[in-house]
Length: 157
Image 1 (cartoon, rainbow, N blue to C red):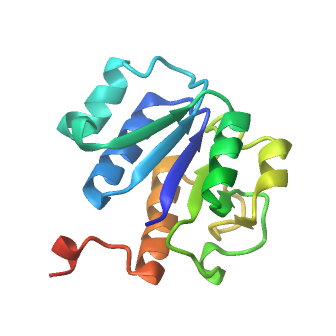
Image 2 (image 1 turned 90 degrees about the vertical axis):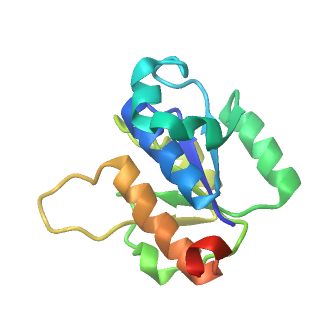
């Protein structure tokens, strides 16, 4: 199934929400360090509630270490960004895609843009900056799971 990737997240509540969603959907979250908060932060635990123990979290100490892992696994990287004109619904997702989200404060650096196989955006009305990163993750992950039939069989019944 597709996985979510968080590039140096800033806000523990968003990371906790994403980890909770990942636990519920049966996917892995890859976290590229450093995070802008201690990963044992109480806000992260509060947002993830009792789902954190069920969440699959894989940490990568740098983007370069993540890239080495990704290349060895031959997985495609899809960047969610406001700096793209391609709607997320206009992509054919593959079961092993990695959906990467940038930092809440500044997005993803150019080095991440350069490594992405696809760059997609969520179309929004004129004059707004961006959606919350956890909401964005849920929207795009939902589409990727729909396309790849990635929902767990226990959810489809």
